Length: 314
Image (cartoon, rainbow, N blue to C red):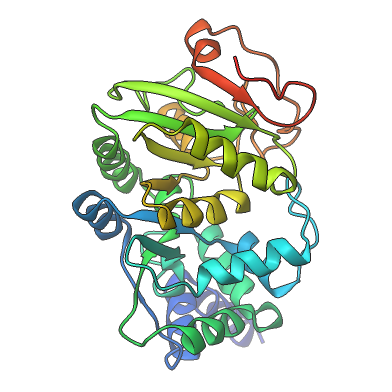
């Protein structure tokens, strides 16, 4: 009886192991493969071509499929879902559509990350539904970028990948003028050296929650303020759409997502989703409760605040 229990225990450990999880994923989706650049090749493509990027993660996919009415910082709507799907199926040489490289490989990822993406893909057939939308609207030769480029640290077993990725990201904005469009509590680069090599920074602040309700106002503001800057956007699903619309107008726009929070965790060598003081940290407990900052350089960079009572140009 003890031998039988040991055999069953060993089988369960092997069956649920990282290697087996990766094998099961590949076998289950062998006919649903799409070409996705890895993170390094995605960044090389952006640098070489000055391509804009729109990124899709589990949240954006759930909004498209109508499976989630509230991401915590963004409520869903028919218009938001429709616009996200339009961007996902767009074929425009000015923009690289990015989806998770985890769709193709779990290599280097933590056990938690592997299980998350495996279970997410299996739940209600999420993965197959998204792949079907993609295959119905894109040529088989279409190559996607990796949306997880802005998440190079917390989901990996080592920080080697993050070190390379952050270095390449900094190459994108080296000596460039930046126009940052972000949530009012996001504060990209504040308190760290992420943008220290940029030439200048201007900021447009939008609501930290439900920014898409102000979409037309945000787009109009960017277009009126734009002076040939590189546009960096951290605004949840709104950023996915905004980067695409700006690319249509010939702007270089990059949906940066959670890169600043990842960079903070990387600098702090944290392997937990810890709260970052003074910044909206959606995945941390009480992360939506954000203290004020007294950083004169940051305050001076804000040229417009949209939403609430402060929609005035400085």
